[in-house]
Amino acid sequence: MPILRARARPTGAAEKGGALTLASRRARNNGSQSGRRLCVAFLTVTSVPALGQASALDPAGAEASSIATLFWAMVVGGALLWLFVVSLMLYGIRRRRRVHDEWTAGRLIFWAGAVFPVVTLFLLLGYALWLMPQLRPWAPAQAAATLRIEVEGRQFWWRAVYHRPGDQPVVTANEIRLPVGERVEFTLTSSDVIHSFWIPPLGGKMDMIPGRTNRLSILATKPGTFRGPCAEFCGASHALMAFSAISMEPEAFRSWLAAEAGPARPQPSDGARLFVENGCGACHTIRGTAASGEVGPDLTHVGSRLMIGAGTLPNTEEAIARFIAEPDVVKPGSTMPPFRMLPETEIRAMAAYLKALQ
Ligand code: CUA
Image 1 (cartoon, rainbow, N blue to C red):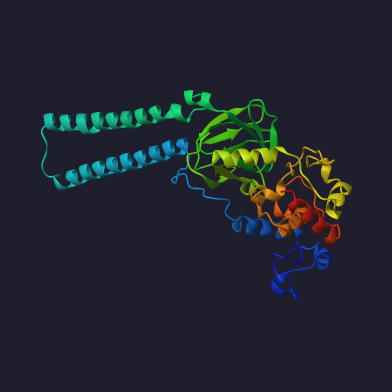
Image 2 (image 1 turned 90 degrees about the vertical axis):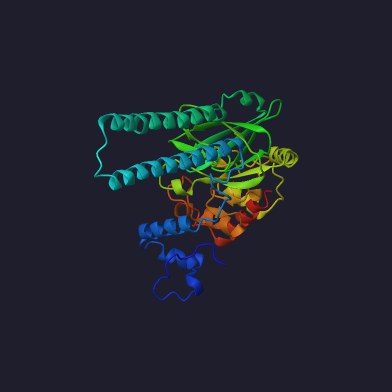
């Protein structure tokens, strides 16, 4: 299957399913480029495969449970208030011919119009204030955090660094793994514009603001795979900036982190050679090779991730090849230059090399 696909079938295209070869695509490349990009961006957004469960009302973490409980308390409290007010209104409509004396009316206004709303709002406020310390990163439970994950938002991907006492930091990107039953502290920063870090089933949302470090504490209580979207508009590909958050049993997590800390062990191949020759190592790091750039995501174990392009495409050789060829189309606003000028065989060789980096 060719790397580049037509999003709208060109007039007279004979290719089955509207697919074009790389060569024929180049011939047509000067056409309505911006319209095509818009169209592709739309189709990419609407066809993003699920990164995992994303509902804040199906919690898998202690903080998310508190938030879901607060939500339902507010819904039930709000519904009861609504019923009470509507009942009062119906009462007023039905009994409109009878005039209350001043004392009864005054009592009704005092109890129903002042005491009841004040008590109800104070109860709801008190409940929210009681919950808040558990959501704060400086809660006493925070002291129990033995794992700190530093996450940096960038247009439009996530750099993640795992810090454990006594161990070397482990750098990865676009996928966050954490152990079930162990408190994790996140330190959140940004190097360009404001992004926002959010794993709805695990905890609350926290902005990533250039020039400051925000902290968030999360305790996952169930294993699972969850979608973490960027929750603050940050540019053209804001909707294509997401990550998978995977909560794992502690033993499995430790094995994964130990493997992630190691260098890549690539076999010598055309793809490995082309990756270096085309200058990819100036922006990407693959530990254990000459590639040591820090502009783009660390690719040391990119083949083992669920998705590529920060939640944009499934992690297949086909998708990696497509991303290398046209990142400007797959992810508008991305700083990665397109490599569609390379022969298709070379792009495929690099894709195979990257996919093999497990
Ligand atoms: Cu990053 Cu929106």
